Image (cartoon, rainbow, N blue to C red; front, side, top):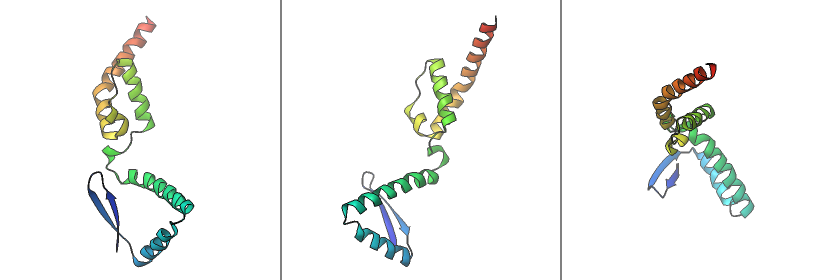
Length: 119
């Protein structure tokens, strides 16, 4: 048996295999969801689990940038007076592209500013 995950916005379906015991337990769980409180609690648990699990499943370039990357990119953006693309804030691959493009210019600008302050 399979559990189907459906994305109606993009017309995508994925099937996940379940063994008999998992399917039976899930069926009982779903029957219990007729109670509003249980439905809310189950939805909260499911959403939390999916948020934690889905990011681990994504290709590396689609994962969220690290806090260090975000901090560095914001500093670059401010210092160079350039906008930070929204994709760079969402995807590690786009963030990598942004940092690769501007990091050397940023570092040389900081180096020049430090040299000016010494003089």
